[in-house]
Amino acid sequence: MEQLKRLQSGIPGLDALLKGGLVAGASYIVQGRPGSGKTILANQIAFNHIRSGGRVLVGTLLSESHERLFQFLSTLSFFDASRVGAEIQFVSAFDTLENEGLDEVVKLLRREISRQKATVLVVDGLLNARSKAENQIDTKKFISELQGHAAFAGCTVLFLTSSRLDEGSPEHTMVDGVIEMGEELFGTRSVRRIQLRKTRGSGALSGLHECEITDDGLVVYPRLESLYSKPTRIDCADESRIGSGIASLDALIEGGLPKASVTLATGPAGTGKTCMGLSFLAQSTPEEPGLHFGFYETPQRLRLKARAIGIDLQAMEDNGALHLIWQPTSEGLLDSLGIRLLNAVEEKGIKRVVIDSLGGMARVTTNTPRLIEFFSALMNELRARDVTVLGTWEMRDLFSADVNAPAPELSSVVDNLFLMRFVEIESELKRMLSILKMRDSFYDPALLEVVIHDNGIDLHKAFKQAAGVLTGSAKPIQNA
Image 1: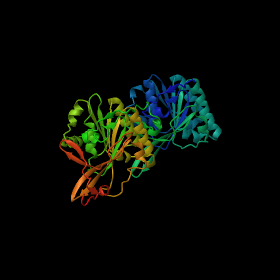
Image 2: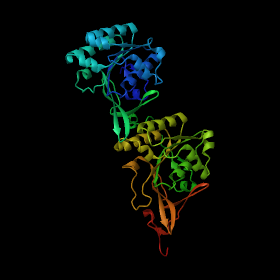
Image 3: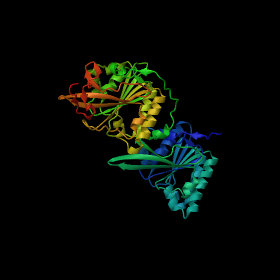
Image 4: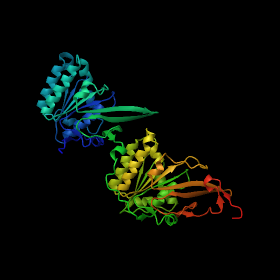
């Protein structure tokens, strides 16, 4: 089957949505309200194109001067003023449109395409052209004539418009692809989104995807469950075990955690989840490094906590056995976190990951119902990369007879599930751990006391003579 020639956009994530990039020689509409990022997207594509040897013509049908446009673009790292007037040419067709009409605009742009030998044409202000057209036939004729000449010259065309065109509009029917950009408010947060509404003759990742504008320009984050609907590698699951970092726990679960599995430790704050994660990471080596992907504790606070249980994180960082990534929960996009984690795993050859916590990661989502699909795709990809994961999730109730799943169906996404609670018994507060689930493993179902000391964590079978332990208020069994 013949493959379509692609034009790389240079926008992180966008080429993944387009299954390899824009189709060379095709025409696209980029639509969205003012401020949605259309001009940045088009110019980012343009400057990336000239860096790879192409030539670009930008024709503006707007009243805004090019000097003002350059002033805004100069704040972005991709803009290179030295290329303007050489490999990339900006032409204003506003006066021609106002005084002479659409036919003369077409003639002007066709002359400039030939003179510039352009391989990308950007037409900014399609709404103004539409308003000058006397009827739909004139709009179709304008687009058709530009498309025809551009295709003959081997030129890819981007039409930018601030109007949200319907699927049946003459513009939509004429072009090969439609890229829609928008912005939504979620409480006080503003989230940018991008959607490929039409991609003629080419596959694409459908649906809404989040994006943001940074100092480097637009960055697109494809929905993780669409990007990794199938893991990129064959799952390398086997029967081998790796140490949890807690010897007394390993003795209860056939020698350790199954390799390339996902373990979830859930419980209230203070029950020892982070300490368990640190003990797990303490087994990392420079040959098989670990990663702490955290949300609530800064790296410095994490180092202090680890030192209190006898783990020198700084020394492990210095020799390449451990890496720390901290992401505050005040801002962020869910898919950007997933991509950041997977990129770190790939770049550093990570084999152990602690996500502290999955709840912190979930807090940034704007669509709670998709969390299970997101976590499922993320964990499947980590398993396929031969990574063993320990995640935590904080429960709200310190004492309760009810044990609520941290998120609907999340327990089906993980391989191993540990419940951690506080237990009051004989006027003392104790930490308790119970193994609820282990993948393809026998395990000891005993209720275990968690003891944290300056040399790490120990587990003891301390509740054999008590009843009601899981309620949080245990009572000694009389005459036990």
